[in-house]
Image (cartoon, rainbow over all chains, first blue to last red):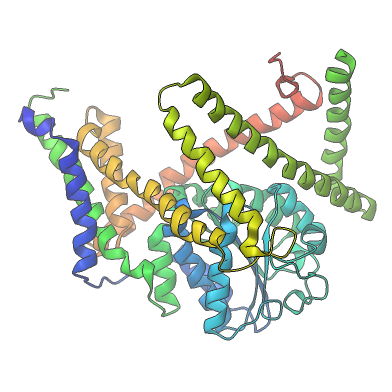
Length: 269
Length: 217
């Protein structure tokens, strides 16, 4: 009993590694029923007419890519499929590479062109100040796009002068920047906002959902998998559901077994 | 000197603080133009802050190398990694930094094949430590810990597709935990933090809180 309680942590690490790799090697499909919060985001984008403008702020860096990049790709697939104009930007300096790759490669699949069907504005320092500046004048905040082209007169931005004219904004975030998007963006300039966040941040979104400050949210890889299910384009997030499920079950087993040993050994520390 | 170091910044903070508070509630064109100018200034200052951040990082690691503190070898890698990235960033695939950013350069390669996998690896290590901590420390020691433990198990299973396969009630229970007790706790924390932020802002505007001036008083 004592030995089991003081088990070498490397054994636990090996079990976790196996729980991840085995489902990846022997794939088994799992149904991912969409939750109401993800469905709200999907419905909002799906209800937009052709030529509407959706702003996606890719506020994450490579450390949270595995959770947030599948969300970005799913959103982009949905928007491009519906001929919605996408405005991409990032408030994270390390987010530009991921954002550009996502927009460019997904756009290519649908024959979309930069400057005409989408605009990638790149990175700007200042977080909440950038949001406020965009709220007043989008061309003042981003005079040029990521590729150095003038934003004024850009076809993809036609009809948009500030955040007020944005039909829907999505903040894909790995940090607290979503609060700035709510306070300085959504509340001040009155546009609909959705959030895609890491799984650990998910619980923080519920107060904003109840107060209708957020139209919906996607939490972690599961949120991305739900969106992939809704757009009928199952990709990396849906594939990641089986290893994630097995690891969750393994962690639950660890907790239960650890507690069983704890009580069986007379509650020894 | 004290006048320039303390009094002038406090006057600026007071004037700008009051001005921006009123600006938020005034939808007049002049007020909007003011916001546009101030936020552009802020964005420029934020750009400079990035240089200060880089300087601070290099300064810290240079001191670690100089004093040979424990783990100073890792600091060498900071200079090595940053140096290579800066060189290839400025080189810009042979077009140099004064031209538009080129695609498919060594800089892009470093991002795609070094920074992205390294970042993902560091983040994924979390799963191993969480599993280890769950086994070793997550104990039903008292009533509160037991409630937390049961909630955690329900949420963990309810947030993955396998939860639905075990029982259709698990996701419903998980959603209730998130939408009711979690929401109440999060909202209470949010209100507390917001009141704290307002109080600190008022203290800064009126010169009661001066830590931002340096010196710690």
